[in-house]
Length: 506
Image 1 (spheres, rainbow, N blue to C red):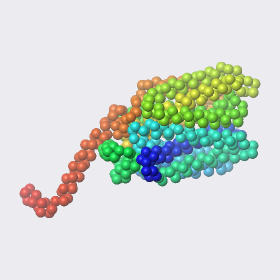
Image 2 (cartoon, rainbow, N blue to C red):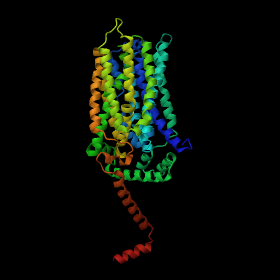
Image 3 (cartoon, rainbow, N blue to C red):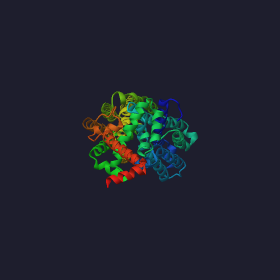
Image 4 (cartoon, one colour):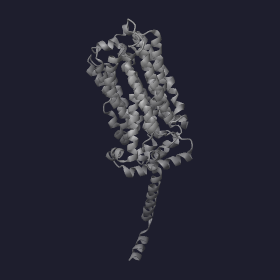
């Protein structure tokens, strides 16, 4: 590794993985920014809201279904590397496509495939490398990097929009082209990162696993204990699953795993239905209901990207201090209040002759939208990913995280088809819908989501009614050791001893 400090090695590897989320953050903001460009709309023939929705639908293609098997076969880090390669390819396709919306959608589809490979592998990599006491803190940087990517995209777009007249169609192409930066950082950084110790042990590469743990853990005694716990848990899990098919089958046949699948699917669907995805993707169109100046709207978006970083920083200490469950409850309650309030402010006030709202209504709208994000970022932004990626056992983790996080894409696909049309027809009355959904999500978390703070990955199964994989695996490892010792003794016996034993048996 690059550093002498073990903590520095740990953080470097995890932050390289977090950079994958910056790709997602930048990408989500590029399309939102492009919608405000007159040159973009003219280039593609003023696509309708449903056509714009289909661009987002293209993001939900099947890459995520390949992520689990590739991640288990070749490792987490190489899955991220391949995904980054697809994003680089898609950047050039989206930027230099001929003036037909189909070409742009194709580029977005390749982006979706690449991100579908990366997104499930990244949190699995971080959770398998980070110790339990730092897992929440490090994973919170995952969401922070999303906001950093979004921040960069918004400010690049703001600069381009201010010079749109001189740049022409390059006012949106420059924003698209800069998307290659983060994938290049990821591909370069991963060459200095190891695979996770749990993946090494699963593939019986024990010396490499031990070496990695020694490079990222301070206490050698804890390394030995962690090695043994991982080995014991995986020994039990290998008895249950010996192929990719049995891993997928176990997701639904094991009662404890099935329960976690349903809860994780619900919380990931909830993340999209809470409203943040639609607000982030269509903030330009939303603000056009209140403001008329595109430059003013892009400045608000850029400021939003800046404040998002500050809001997400709260997650770096809240997730391990308050815990996952309290954060989810506080966040969704605040989000519900903000959605009801902003809907009332805009729908119950008069519209001016130019189609905008008064300055006081505009200020209140921006304040409430920013306040919504303040509640969202450390809770349903960061914590949903942390909770999802830490609740599954090693033998099904890659498959389960891939499938449950794909529920975000499915929910987003459906919502992005409906929301632009709903917003066009009903305006800010659409926000009442998000307020009601957040009330339902509060009830869901209150009754269904347990706390996972401080629980090691090897002991997570007990929390959901399953057996302790490490304890059961300890018996299996002991039996294997005894069998190996007997075989070793038998192999070293002399021929004379074998003959004597044969004679006594007769």
